[in-house]
Length: 306
Length: 143
Image (cartoon, rainbow over all chains, first blue to last red):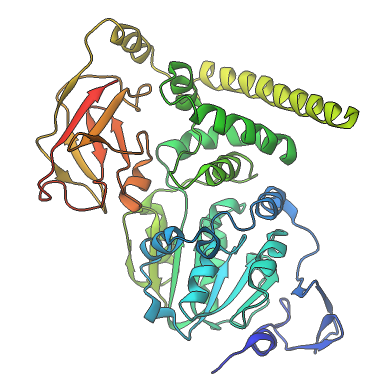
């Protein structure tokens, strides 16, 4: 099947409830069975009415629209991470239909689009606004606002599904992972990465019930002040001690990335942490085969739907 | 002018309020034992100031995963697992750029990221070549 821009959108999207085809009239999509209406706002089909529990992501990705995108950074840092977390090479995805479940601002969609994949990126949050702005000029990328638990696609639609750093922000990582699996075609691959139950991720999980209650703008202002202030004092014993209790980002990908990553690490409502064994168990329970960790990240895993 | 002063004041109040809140939460998490801070680690930190700085070459370089190599130090120093390491890692005398990196970042991104964890150093070479075979000298020094 060949795809292009709107053609891809309308051939793939269906009613999330009854899986009937959708027809477009003006700025809305209508279910051909029960007439249910889904608005298209600023070029983005909307299958949800709010950003529910992911409000912090709406804020962060619309504040840092391009911080992590290779196209704007002029480097290959995200491509490198994507390859190692999924095990995909450009030839694996070229011409394939891929779902980016939790597109955010489009860090990894940017990589896959460059590799020639036809990507549908969905997100529950208003990060879709940022993604749409980044990809509106591309024919092989489509962005929709939708919930992983209620996707507007027919089963067995995608050649590959990737979800990197997303599922642990849902109320139930395992359940949401298993929801994704039926949407991969037989012989297709699903690749995910979730937070590991080790190191800083464990410490952060203790903070989350408290830090996620701070209004986003206030906490972000604080990160904008704190991260550069702490990074300017690399030998301070005080900040060394603070880091032990409150690990903040220092990834070597620039200050803006570290501010974003610190905010990202403490602001979401859900912050699941998982062991590699646990993740492997989900893949086995979902009936996937050829399950493996493709790179150096212990909780990145991929499997094929037989 | 007045507006910008009000803006700065609002920002200061906001940052102070969040700092105060995080301080209270941090104290609670430590006192409740939900974030573990070892008293022994604290004592080691205090004593570290009294002894001469540690230095030495890394000899036994073992591949861990990805770009990450690990080498035992054979000396009990304050590391990032019980405080904040003061160790700097040098490659042919040049300090590598990213101390205190997460182990996943070392494995994944490499490029000179390293971490002093427990009694070992987890590190990557500056160009992600195998440090056991690239012919360079790796040394550490407490700074």
